[in-house]
Image (cartoon, rainbow, N blue to C red):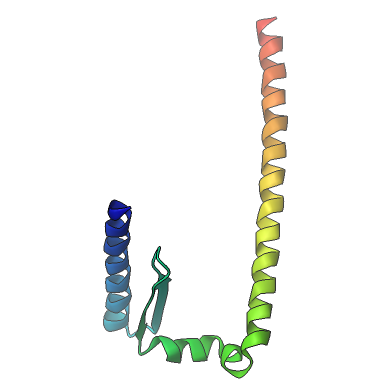
Length: 109
């Protein structure tokens, strides 16, 4: 667990450093919000994380419940789509393996 925490801390520092570099070198507006494995939040924003969230997600500040349920609905739809794609890929894999097995049987016969 200590090694995971060290790796997480190193990656966090790298991520925040890259966000800072993007902001300073290119004038980009950047927000990074992350939660540690223990659930502790950490944020970096340039100019500020709050100002970027207000710009990109204004509905959160006007009606938190409505925005969260909309975001949750979109996320659920995306996850459902990904599940369907995974099932389709698994099916296509089975079909391809059967086709290959049939081909090998013909070759070896």
